[in-house]
Structures are given as C-alpha cells and as structure tokens.
Length: 243
Image (tube, rainbow, N blue to C red; front, side):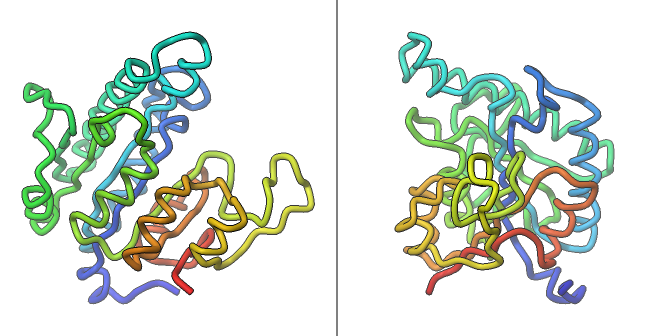
C-alpha cells in the first residue's frame, strides 16, 4: 500500500544500488541505465522522501574476485572502492539533470570531486531535500557495500534500508539460480535469514539491522518503476524484520 503524502515527508531511507546494474552487464557505466535509475529516484524525492544511496562497484572491480586471480585482497578492495566513486559521480550527474540537488560523500577523501563522509552533514543535506550518495564503501578493506549500507542507514537514522539486487526479486528459501523450486518469501525475520544461510544479503548486514531493529526491504533493481515503488514504501520484494 502506498504511503500518504504526509507520511512520505517523514520517510528517510537508505537505498543500496547494485554496481553491476550500472554497467548494463558490461564493464564500465551504461549512461542509459544510470539515467533510468535517476528518473526512478527523482519522483519520490520531489514528494518529500529523504533518500541516501550507497552504490556498489561490481561493474568495475570486486575485491574478492581480484584476490582469486592473485591480487592482494586489501589493494583489490581499495580499487573496488574507487569504482564505487565513479558510479556515484555518474548517478549524481543524471540526478542533477532531473533537477534533484545531490551531494556525494566518500569514506576516502577526494575533495576535488566529493565531500568527506560526515554523518551530521549528510543528515542536514537530507533535511534540505538533497540526495546524498555515499561512495568508497567503509573506507576499509573486507567490508561489503551491503554491510556499509546498513551501517550508514543506522548512523544517519533512516527508517529502513532498501537493498536492490541485480537478477533476484527478493529473498528465497534457497538459491533460485540453482533450485528452480525455490520459494520467494514475502516476509522473513533476520534470525531466520541468518540461521538458514540466505545469502542474498551479507550476514553482517542482516545482523546489524537485526540488532538495531532496522527493517530491510530486498527487491529487484530491474524494472521500470521498482526503485520508485520501494522508495515510496509500496509492497514489493521481501520485507526482512525482527521476530
């Protein structure tokens, strides 16, 4: 059910976007894809939803995958963080073409292109109706952008964290890519997701949200209006909550 305009004005959410989707299945950034995402984000922002965003970097580098090919994991993770910043700047550009005020904040300082990550400043931007895009992950290796999304959502006092996924439309009782009989769940508890080893989201992100009673929505990033619906609080994907 869609929330009323009044409740939308009180809604603050953290949206996690898949970096893989930014490339349209290829290495790099597909401008048409990023433009489409920006056009989905813009309407709820105009309606008063406060939106912060974490973008992955899978369209450029994944630290764990580079490690498997012989690269030092720490260095590979830092390369992945730089990839997320490139995605942030692309999204900022297309959001501003939609007349949406936007700020990029990064966990690794690069002051010529972005602000440093300062939670209170991020909250102030959100209160002024600007979208804040967080780049460079946590600024440390071995932390996934799923976990960073939960942490940022908690620190800037979001009402929910929205995890968009590339190629899966919610949480299933087993991996739908390997089990054609896997059943999609409308709701699931964090403790069930962790106990059953449901890996659509990192266990650390599940645990952070569970410990702090922060609801999570897992939904498909693909679709002409999925991001808009999730930002508005409509029923979509799988809702993950405390028991």
